[in-house]
Image (cartoon, rainbow, N blue to C red; front, top):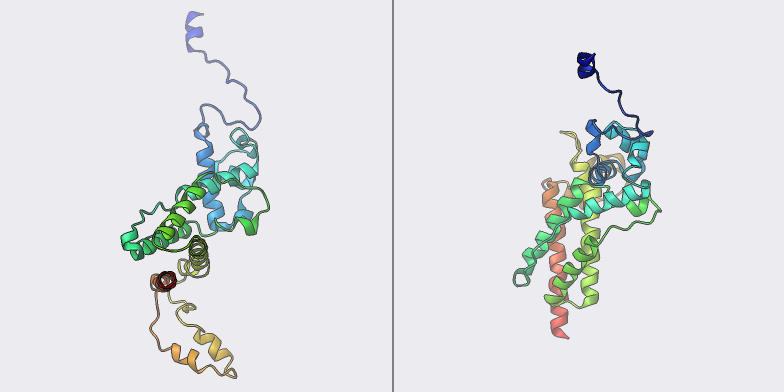
Length: 246
C-alpha cells in the first residue's frame, strides 16, 4: 500500500473555461505579448484583421483565454498603439546642426512606420476611443521645442510637425509599402511621374514632359525619400529667412 501511494499521481486540477493551464506554454502570456502580436497584425494587415479570434489563434489559445489579460478588443488596440509609440524615434536634436536633425527625425520616423506600415491608419479603420499613453505627447513636445529653438514661430513649428507625419506616413504607405513587396523585374511605378505603361495605353494624351521624364534614371525608394527630406529642409530655410526679415 505504501508503494502504491508513492507512485500514484493526483488528478489534474480543474480550470476555468478558456483559461490557459498553469503548466502550459501559454502561461507566459501577458499584456505586453498581446500588444506586440496585435501590433504585428494591425501593422501589416490593418486593424480590420485584428480580432480576438485572430489574436487567440496566434497564441494557440481560445479567445476566452485572452480575457484573463485584457478587458476587450479596445484595450488590445490601445496596447498595440502603445507598443507602436514605444518604438517611435527619440531623436537627439541639435539646433546647431538642425538640417542633420531634420534628416535624422525623418529617417527614424520612416523606419518605425515602415516596420508597421498600417499601424497609423487607426482613424481610418476604427471608431473606438484610443488612449495611446504619454509617449506621443512627449514626442510631439520634443519636436515642437526643436523647431521653435531654431527660429520658427510656434505656428510654423506646428505646421512642420504635421508635415513630418504627413510626409513620412504618406511615403511609407504610397511608396515603401509597394517597394518592399515589389516582385523582382516588376514595372517601376514611382520613379517617373507617369509610368511608361500608362503613356503607351493612352497615346492620344499629349504628355511630352512625362515622356521625356522616362529618360531619367530610375530611383530607389531611399533616393525618393531623400527628395522629400531635402524639400522640407528648403521649406524650413525659407521660413527662417522670412522670420529674419520681419
